[in-house]
Length: 99
Image (cartoon, rainbow, N blue to C red; front, top):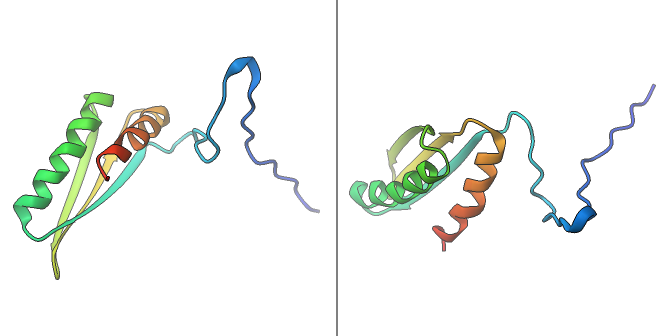
């Protein structure tokens, strides 16, 4: 027996348009950030910008960071929001920081 699975669709009903690839999935509240710099202080300062933006979206955001020293310093962070929509808003807004 085969099972037919329908992908989520975005429509333009009522004048609302959606950008494909950004469908809110229930249970997807964690955003991951990876940053690289030559010093620990530099990578921490860069992450502070991402954390500040996350707190603008939701002041109750929880975060967990891990810093590794390899050829350069690597910071890997997980930011947990209360709902999926906040994570999506943060991901879209944080694009301006990575430029």
